[in-house]
Length: 340
Ligand code: BGN
Image: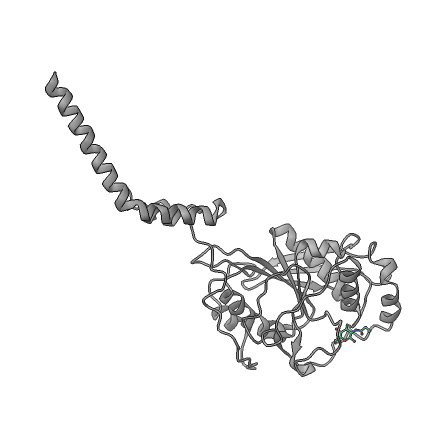
């Protein structure tokens, strides 16, 4: 009896010793694991392929697979200035070949970490194949080096009626938001190629004017309140300004109206660094079907009275097709004419 009690005590003490030794040895690794787990939160839980798990092997390797790290605040792939050229012989098929990792519809997610940014690029479009080819060629690697989750949407105006950039952007916003919970929308002209990947395609606290230094304008703002080219807004910003006006047919003014809406809704426009937000504009003659809009001055005079009724809350259109191309999603849309 006494011997049994003594043995029990001895075994108990031995087990305690082993547990303490294990805890001491493993403590740091456990602390590191839980630290990361709580920092990353449950949103970074991923479900790995069971075949990759080594059971009953190293529990830490398995835990690392399950809790994927968030991408770092500053991407290690950012390089700075990009040398832009427009090789005439380049074809869209070659651009597709040179752009691996993009999934159908022009989507991408970093493979080595969990991105905290979901950016949709919305490009109003009609008959600009050459420009689109160059933009895709430079934009995909640019966005991937920034470690973003992203999708590229081309919003194509059907028919021959005068182009309407603002209305197409409203369509782009609505249609892209049906696909995914994007947290930043980049409204992007097809002829602007970013020249430096430190120009982050993410959103700020207020609407951001991004294309502030364009070669065509000597890398300076042509006027202080300009808001055209490339802008970045969260869905909340976009709804707050009621999107773009739907009734600017032809070139000019819709971006100035958009800038006025930012002010009228009590926000301000932010701008990135002039050193980073540099663009090359692809030279072209003015398109047929996008003549200067003579009504733009009159329309701009009325923004204050009209902005709350005319915008994302009143846009009407018919989607003709939605095609998932290898490098972009193309939404072709009938947006009517200025009569209807
Ligand atoms: C402005 C246009 C913008 C255009 C920029 C840059 C107008 C409205 C009359 C004040 N605005 O003059 O739409 O983005 O030039 O090209 O024409």
